[in-house]
Length: 378
Image (cartoon, rainbow, N blue to C red; front, side, top):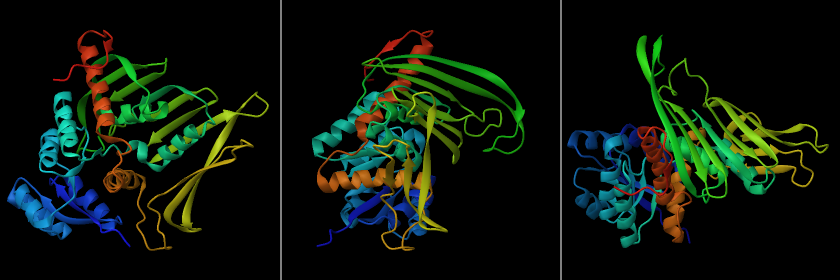
C-alpha cells in the first residue's frame, strides 16, 4: 500500500516561503502542502493565494482545520527561534530556517520542547547537501582520502553555513574543543554591489577563526560581510587537506571549479579525480548523478545519485543544485518522521554550528583569547 502523504504547513511568509518552499513541497512526493500561516492577515492571504492553499493567522485554528504533521518555519531572520519554538509547542515536527536560534538558550528550549513531545527537528542547512558537496563527502567516506586533517572555509559561506561546510569534511562527529577568533572592519573603495543599486562606499567586516577539534583536527574559517556581492571580494573557496590527497573548490557559486587529487600510483605526482555530471538525457534534462572517476584501481568510480531524479524520463523537476540541497533538508525530516529516526543533520548539529560562531565572536571581543567549548547557554 502507498503511504498517505505527510501534511505540511508553511509557518511564516518570508520570501523563501513563496519562491522556494512552496514549489518544492508541491513537487516532492510523499508530502502535501495544506496551509500557510502568517502574522498579518494580508501577508498570509497573499502567500496562500500564490500557493493555492488556505491561509491562517491563528496557528491553533490552522492545526484544527488542516491537521498538518510538519511545519516548515520560514520567517524573518530575527524571529527564527521564537516562531520555531511556537511551532514545536503546537505539536508539529519542524524544518527550521538557519540559524536554529540566535542564542544557545533559545536553541536549547526548542530542542527540549521537541524532545518532551517526541517531535523531530531538522534545520535547513543545505550547503553540504548540494550535489558537488555530496560527491566530495561520498569520496571522503569511501576512505580514498584517508583521514581529513584540516578543512577551510575561505568565504564560501557566512557564519554557520561556512562552519557547517568545513565541519562536514572532518565529519560531523568530530568534537570541537576550542575557538580563536578575530573580527576587523575596513573601509572599501566605492563600487557596484551585485545586490544593490548604484556605486557606493562600503565598509566590510572580516571574520577569521581557528577551530581546534578533539584528536588534533583543525578548521580554518574566513568570511567577509561583502563576500556575496562585492567585485572586490571575488574569491570563494572551501578546501580540505587529507592523509592521501586534498580537495579545493573555488569560484563564485554556482560557477565553481572542483580540484580533487589523490596520489598517483608512482607516488611522485598528484592524480586528479574527474567529476562527471550525468543527466537523464544525453542532451540534458534533470541531474541524475555525479560520478567521480578516481583513477584508483580498487575504487575507480564513486557515484552520488540524485535522490530526486525523475523515475520516469521527463516526468519530474529539473532542480538546480541549491534546490536539490533544500529538498534534501525536507526529505531528511520526512524520513525521520516516517521511520522514527533522527534527521541526518538535525537540531544538535545546527546548535553546534551556531555555538562555534558565537565562540569566534566572543574570542574576538576578548582580544583573540581562545574560548573553550562548550559555551554556557544564555
